[in-house]
Length: 201
Image (cartoon, rainbow, N blue to C red; front, top):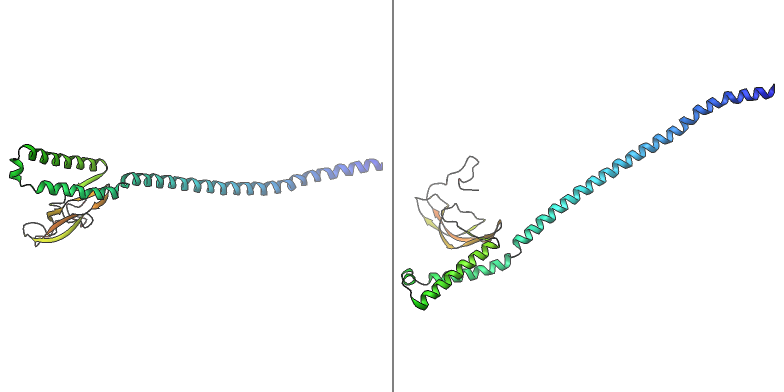
């Protein structure tokens, strides 16, 4: 009989132990899951930050490469502008009537210099160097350098009325400002609704 009592007692304890066991294992599992989720979120955040940094780096590198392509010849182009100026001076030193009436070797020389100037201008344009044409435009200190003022009541104040030396830009940057004469004494320039001059970009 004692043997049977022990077996009954054992049977009574067994269900309690079976209930306690899942509770004991469930708590560590919940903690492990929470830790895993936290680690996952942290890794996801790091991944997103790294991807964003890589995208920014890619864009910055592309911009720097594009700038290098556009502006790599800046110093060389600035030096070549002196050559262009000298060619223009050579052409302008021959009066128009003499140029039109030139014959023989003189005519060939003038045509050769003129052709050289045009070819040089096309070469500069091919490399992103363009002439600034400021006459009649509102004075822009980023593109023009005022050398003197010209009293003229018929032209809006601050308008470029004379170009002393041609200006050039390379890409979006000023390579050499145009040396200009600016009107003085005329009416104020017209402005758009935003307060900028009507001819401003």
